[in-house]
Image (cartoon, rainbow, N blue to C red; front, side):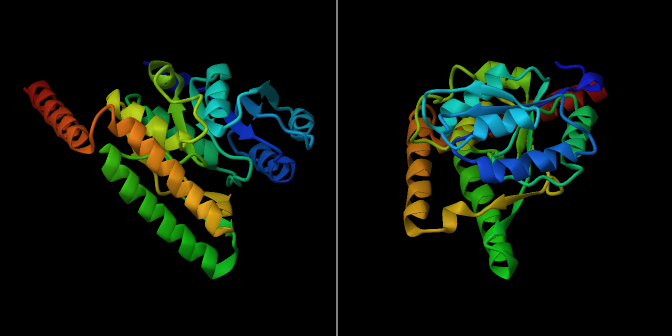
Length: 260
């Protein structure tokens, strides 16, 4: 188990021609009350100067030629040197206390393996963005959580211990561009018995790119369906819930024994 008193942070950002939003993301990371030990930008073949921009902001750039967020994100996690790996997207806008809250969660609970939080869509702005945010976040937590029998990670806003990643890195579908990498990782963390918590206060701003067209919405559902098919083939939702209940029961019995 990592020493909770020596938490170090690596922020991983997969990018593909995201120079515009990436500049804003890196500016927000530079204003953190608790700065990361390193920021890794994983360039997935950009032609718009994203890599050069990242270096100008002091980030370490890692190249990943295999197209797709799953491959890019996994390469970033592999390259991270921190004891806690924080993941966001190029369009994430993190409040100044974001990393401070992440570190505090892991320091307070040495047995915690991963945390995730919600987002507020700034694009579209105003009431529509707030409504879409509430609907999407609650829907994703309920739907994805019921399919994996646990708390799902959201790729725009999560963190996990490096040792938890090491235990599942060979199992995730990193070379498949047709899956949701965050949901896929969630399946494998829970299958490995890892503890994942949702923190309502760990909120970030995010672009609602998925709502810009019907084609984008259809693509998101297609990726979700493929992610479910791949992981349900390994263990069905019912079996996952049985496994979770058994683990909870075992933990309660161990807690009772410790009391006596």
